Image (tube, rainbow, N blue to C red):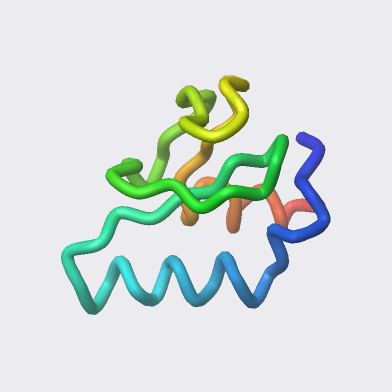
Length: 69
């Protein structure tokens, strides 16, 4: 999985922590780096509202891939 350079470990960790402490459901587009809301933690290949690519993943899902690489 190729991750946009703006989707950093810090950004993903902050989003995952925000999900634990608020009602937010954050994710990111791995193609353009845009924030996405209303994304399930294990989401994969949702459509990005900014660039139109099916590259939106949940923060926790991205985190798992970052830890594996």
